[in-house]
Amino acid sequence: MKQLTAVIVDNDYETTEILNSFVEENHIMLKIVGYESSVEKSLDLIKLHKPDVIFIDISSKNENFSDYINDLDFNLPKFIFISSDERYALKAFKLNAIDFLIKPLNINDIILSLYKVIKRIEMELCFQEQRVNEVNGLSTMHQNNEYIAISSMDKIELIKMDDIIFCKADGKYTDFFLVNDKKILSSRNLGEYVSMMDPNYFFRIHHSYVVNIKHITKISKKDGYSCELINGISLPIAKRRQEEFIKFIKL
Image 1: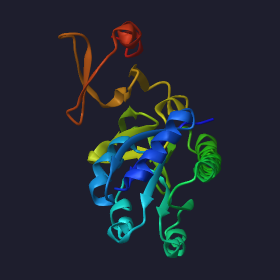
Image 2: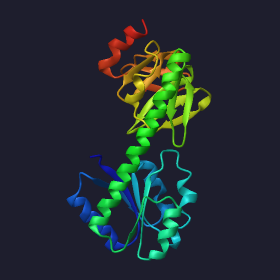
Image 3: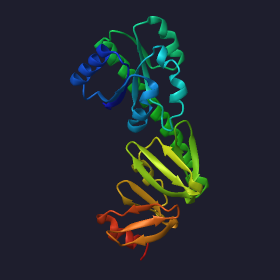
Image 4: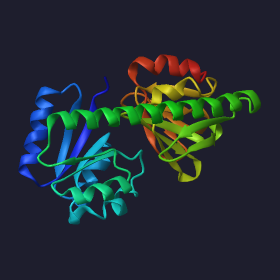
C-alpha cells in the first residue's frame, strides 16, 4: 500500500492529537509532514512537501482556500475537509473534497477517507499513464522520437526533445529545464522518462540529473567533473559515471 503524505490545516488541538494517534498506529498508511492553522500560512509547507492529502478545517478563515491552492505549480493534493458543523458538508463537496469528516474525528472514518484518496490517486495515475503512453507511441511512430509527452499539473504537453536542456529529479516529480528559460514540473519521476529519451543525446550524469549533450557548453575537471549548460547552470557528474560519460561524448 502506498504511504500517503499529509499536511494538517487546523488549530484544533483535539483533532491534531487524534490524527497523530492514528499515524502512530497506522504509519504504513499515513505520514504527517507538517501542521498549520490556516491555508494562507500553510502554502510554504505545501509547496515544500507536495503532500498527497490535506486535512483542512473548512471554517470561515479557510473558505477562500481555492484562491491560494490553485496557484500551486504541481499536482493538487486531495482534500479531506473536517468541521464540527455539518452545514459545511455541501460546500466541501462543491470544492471537490474527497471526503468530509465531522469532529471529533473517528478512526474508522479516517481510514475510509484515506482509502478514497488512494483510489482516486490510482485512477488518475492509470488514466494519465495511458494517455502519456498513447502520445509517446504516436510520437515514436510519426515523429522519429523528436517529441516527448510530459505530464504536468493539469495537462499533457508535447515537447521537442531538442528543447530540453536537462531534467532534474524532485522526489516523485521531475523538473524539465527548456530553452528560452521555460520550466515544466512533471508529475512523473525521472526514471520513467529516461527510457523515452533519445539515447544518442541524453545521458544520466547523476542520480538527480539527465542532460542533453547538445546543450553542454563546457566540461570542467576542477574539483571533480561537472558540465556547464547553455543556460549557465553547472551540474556535477557523479564519480562512478565520469568514465562512461567521457566515452559517451567521445572525448
